[in-house]
Structure formats: structure tokens, C-alpha cells
Length: 483
Ligand SMILES: NC(=O)C[C@H](N)C(=O)O
Image 1 (cartoon, rainbow, N blue to C red):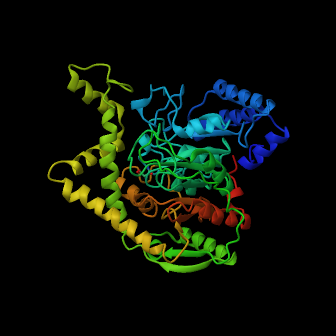
Image 2 (cartoon, helix red, strand yellow):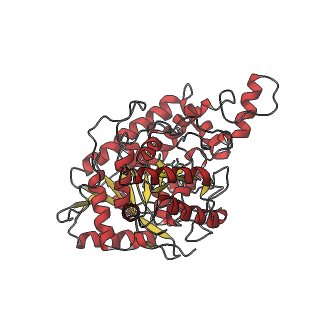
Image 3 (cartoon, rainbow, N blue to C red):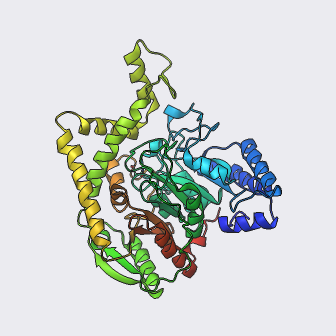
């Protein structure tokens, strides 16, 4: 049962082959056995989980079950969940129990899904390796020396190690796609505005977007059906008619136009990742896709633009952690300013402090035009690159990251090198486009490699169709680490 997809679990629950309580117990036992080594979860609470599972079984007995009632799910520790500690991977929120639930959590609970726990992450979602968590690094189940990717590393590992059949993550500059790629799971970051940010701890609000991580594209579609949709409590939530994201899964790919950006296959891409991506493209070609070359000339500017805009927004968003209202407060201080200073010095880790400093600097008088305004102009150019590219193709394919997962500690002292690993993911967030990662093979060292699929605005159903057809023709998504 532990290896089943959401789709299969739904069937097993419907047929009565398993109850939600039995299922939750199996996952909780596995979490208990493996989490001490993997560190994928920050919080588990078996009693609460079983209570939700019992309620799901009761709903089913009363004939009130939906397709995902009783199916378990893990949440990145960034989504507020009433009654659960919501730490965002930070000492600052180590004592914070959310008094309300995020929109996506409300949606999943209303669908009858059962909470397995809260997954580890880089502090305030800042990082690409999960080494920035106050709760310690997460281990990649394929190789305990490897990083799992970040910042949704705990969610990716939970799915890869079968500690959960699916998990929710967030993606500001690659945080769903890059850990999905490094752990061999499927993840999708929807078009900006598709999933409500209400109750999601804010990092860079113009880029943050929640999304599903699971074994298959089909499962991601099922989960997206649950979490997507308008919510008036998020001012950037889009008012659109509800969609069924599974509607195109079975369509053949004949005639699909696939764009390969020249800039994604150039210098900096490792040989083994290039090979995996190339063979995935060959598979899609055999399935009827037609390949065209496209150009995204401003790709290289995405790193400086993102690392101005994201810290700028973060410096503003994180100003709320002042020790007054909630979260950490220094134990000793002499006056109010001293309290602010000590609280923030103690509560935030190095990477968060670095970004607050950068963000404050680029927004400060005299530097605003030189950095922030310029970055916003680059953002427009990047979106224009994609607009032109999508005149010639239906989806864009490429790598998710330049290399497979690197070793724990390898880039820990080199933030700029760490930022460079986001080169293929950042521009998608800057443009607000949907992007996904699909397991496509392994690097020479046995670590997983994902294929990135980028779609035009609101083309999630098409992307999921491409991913699903790819998964019908390959079995990379079904491989699992030996644990
Ligand atoms: N949050 C993200 O999407 C990850 C990105 N590497 C960052 O540190 O900002």
C-alpha cells in the first residue's frame, strides 16, 4: 500500500480494501522508522492524524466520501494549519502554533484528506539545498550524502521515501521543481494566482506559489483540482472558472510543438543532466512531438533580477517578526530597540539575514532605481522572451537544474554558487508561468534527474498531459530508493 499512488489509494479506500485509519497507521509507522535518518518532517502528531483518519472513515461510512477522502497528505511547514506548529523552518516561528489554516489546507481538509505531518524546509523557503533549516538538513533518500534540493526538500523526500503519497510545496524560484528533480518525484508550480497564498507564510509575494508534489502527473492533477481556485483573501488570486486538471491527461501527443531554448542547453549544463534531458526529448518525439528551437535570451539575467526582487520583498515581508506579536522574543533586553535587535539576531539564520540585508539595501534611497527598478524592467524582458517563444511552441522543455543533487556541505559556504543552481527555474517565476519537474532518469552517480516542462499561462492541463503521456511510456517515476 505504501507505494500506491493517490489514484490507487482512492480506489482501495472506495473498495473497502483498506480504511483510512489503517492507511494512516502504515504511513505513521514508516515515518517513525525512517524520519530520524531522513529528517523530512519537522512535526508529526499521530493522535491528530488518526483523529482525522477516523473522521474520514466515518464520512465514508455515511456515504459522504469524495475521491480523496481518507487519503493522507503532508504539508510543507510554510502553510498555516490550525492547531499545528507552523515554523517555516525558522527558530523565529519555533513556538508558533497557527490559529487558522491556509486556503489550501482548508481545501484539502474539506476534501477529506488526512494530515500526516509538517515537512522540513529551508528557513522561510530561502535555499536550494534544505541546509538552511533551523531543524537541520534533510537527507536525500537516494544517497544520504546528497542534498534533497530546496526549499521544499522535506516534501520531496516524504514522497520519494514513501513517507507520504503526496505533499504540498511552494515555489518562489524553483522550490517545488528543483527538489522534485533531485528526489525523483513529480511536482508542479501553477501559474501565479492559481493557488491562493492565504495562510502561506510570505517570502516574496509576487513570486510565491503553492503546488502539489506526488509520484505521478496524474496525482498532481488530482491534487491541483483540490487546491486551485479563487480566494478573496489573497488579492492576487485569479477569478477564473474552475478547471478539471485531469481533463487532457489521455490526449495523444501527436503534433505537439515542443520548444527547446538554446540558452538552456549551453555552457554550465552538466553532461549527465544534458543526456537525461535529451533522451526524454527523444521519447516525446517518438510519442509524436515535434521539436523546434526557441530562444530565451535574457535567461542569464534572471539570477541577478530574482536575487534583487525576492530579497526586496522578503525584507518587507519579514519585518513583521519583531518579537511583539508572535514568534520568538529575546529573553533579555534593555529597551524596545534592543528587543527588536536581539529577537531578530537570534531568530533568523544566516541566509535569511543575508537576504534581509540585500533587500533593505536595494530598496534604500539612492539605490532603488539602480537595483530594484532595473530588476523589474528585466522581469518584463524575461516575460517577453517567453511570450515570443510560445508563439512557436506549446510547451518548453529543458533541465530543472544544471547538475544532479550536490553533496551536503558542498556549496554551503558559497551562496552565489548556490544561487546559480536556480538558473533554469527562476525566470519561470519572474514571468509568472507554470512549470513542472518530471522524473526522467539518473546521473552517473545514481542521483535522480528531472525534466522541466514549462507551459504558457493557464496551460497546466496541457503540461500534465505531456507529463502523463511521458510517464505512460517510461517508468522513471515509479523507481524508488532502497531504504
Ligand atoms: N524559494 C525558492 O523557490 C528557492 C530559491 N532557491 C530561493 O532560495 O529563493
